[in-house]
Length: 226
Image 1 (cartoon, rainbow, N blue to C red):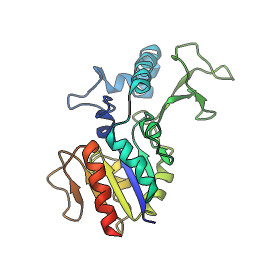
Image 2: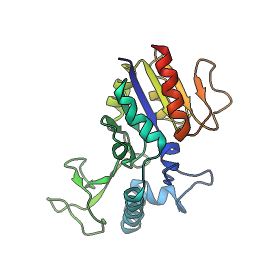
Image 3: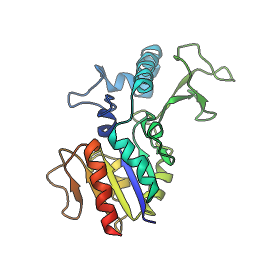
Image 4: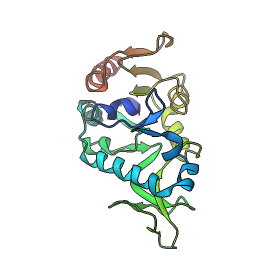
């Protein structure tokens, strides 16, 4: 059974109504990224940051998987598939995918501001004054800009073992995603992107479609490889 590593980014969630990364104007849902997605921003105004993520969590709760997510879940019937997602939502799980590595954490988990563990289910809005079992302030269990990415090692290991690396909704020019996508030169690299960069190497199989259309096309191509 062919081993497929699918690397997903903001593009696949955006089709479900979630803008999960900064726009071209440097704003994220109308906020400066450095104000709501950095440790320094949390130190300056923790409640503002918590309110921001409370809203993102509610949006993720309401969102539904699109055809791209569903095609990935169905692919488990004929390939050995692991998804590495940069998104902090649970749309892959909602669609039925069983092997998902959350590179940047989860909007449905919380941890203390001092320690990465233990991790707690995030069941209601977080506020200043919500503490862990040791009396330490809780924060979303997501990776902020400037923080290390703990799941990078298992993500790289997964990509290095794959026969096919399928990149969906994320650029091959943005790190750390680009490093994962290109860490295994022996794997067939497929990019699903409605607006692929013009300088993509000729060895990359490009499907210039949104995820809701392109993922199914990609798996038809993967089947033809075997």
